Length: 207
Image 1 (tube, one colour):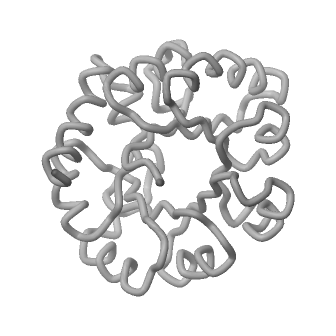
Image 2 (tube, helix red, strand yellow):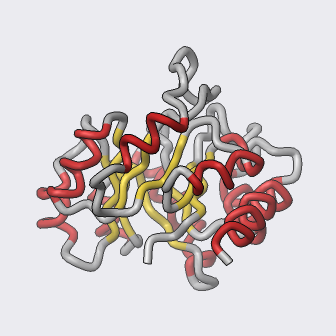
């Protein structure tokens, strides 16, 4: 089953300058199910070191995915990869990584999301739902757009972009499977507490 609460790392804008391993650990303790390591500025060696640091957290249930780097998925036996238009295709990734690997796709339009589903993605993120500091200048598409984008989509969708714990109920009410957050968790003063607020909102809505 696709997790309902993802944390996406962003050491430049979304972690408050703190150690990423510690940020991810605190997020997991608060209730995050999965992390997407999105660190384009890191060298392959530095990215590999970070992924190694996260390995112990996987033994306690955290699912670790990496942005775009199918080679890293294979090298470190990660749970999955998050793709986008500037990465390899979903079909190619599936051929490389096999049927058991979780493949997500970052979609910004409804047709793009549906195409990713047809190509074999396990889930999509739909963004930006609201304006967000992670994508300066990008206006939020809004909940009405989210509802429309979900029509006919046959795989789970996670809302991304400006999501907060307070907005989670209305996001799920619009039909999203779950949420993915960057700075709302990673840059929070209390990372564990911020993640717990998201988890509480999801649990209350889905119980």
